[in-house]
Amino acid sequence: MNLKLPPLVTGERRAPLPVGVLTGRRRAMRRLFAYATAAMNRVLDRLPVGRWLHRSVQRGLCFTPLEVQLRAGAENLHGLRIAFLSDLHAGSFMDARDLAAICARVQQEQPHLVLFGGDLINTRERELLLYRDALALLQPPLGVFAVPGNHDLFWGPDIGLWTSFLQEHGVQVLRNRGVRLSWNGQGLWLCGVDDLTEGTPDLRQALDGRRAGEPTILLSHHPDFFFEAAAADVDLTLSGHTHGGQIRLFGRAPLRHSQFGYEQGWFAEGESRLYVGRGVGVTILPLRIGAPPEVPIVTLVARTAGAQQPGRAAAAATPMGVGQRDR
Ligand SMILES: [Fe+2]
Image (tube, rainbow, N blue to C red; front, side, top):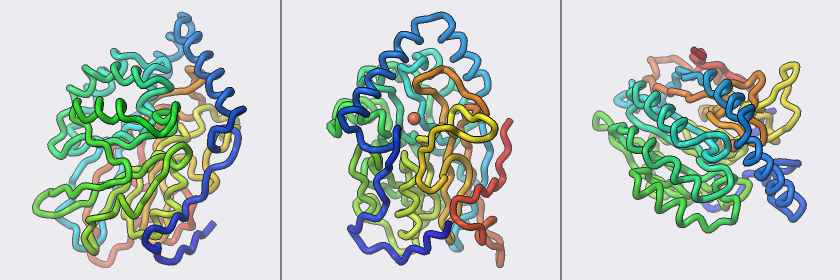
């Protein structure tokens, strides 16, 4: 698939609304289904077998080292390391102790920046309280940032408590806004959009304030927003949502979460790159088959003279596997 998008017209909405059993907007029947699965989550969470399965899943957590080349002129950002945490689903088998262990492990990687890609909680705002100790363990010099995912918006678009809890605990929320970070004298525009399924993403707002030609990283929970980001000169989009399929049978995920096949790994469109992380947590069942949990550690690297971004010629929806190695 080649998107062949013309340049984005400011304020224009391009990314298509997700469709499907689990990815479309919550109508009455889908909302009922979501409540039922959340209730099943809570029952399983109380059973020893549920806890045991969850611990087995978490033992397979991968810290995936990745590299992505920068645009020319951004060489001073070389070496900047980003830990990308998505889909933790606190409250869905994931408890405060799990979260603290994961954040302690992330901090050991000594990232310069920690980004949360949405679905921090499963269904209830109070599940955020599980992060109280864990967030204190994260001390990256450039800060901790987050965007909401569809589960964070489970009860609607008003997530004021979600936002204020995170901000009080040192996490800046990038819901349709951006900030300029500075590293070795080089500016980096870091921005985020609201969730494509349950929220109202606005890339124009997220890019408001970006300087011409400034290197840009976008956080978008839903990977299909890459459809729009690629047309707006965004260097790197980091997404989650799909859990890499969570349960893959014979190499395929029975449930499709992206209209463009952005299920996991690297994708390219022109000079723009998307990485879809498999996420850390689980929903519905404490199971992952063929899609182990992961925390990608993304290192920005300077482009050498004359070199092209790896996979530049690859069509969109083609996994690039740039520097990817699970350990
Ligand atoms: Fe998720």
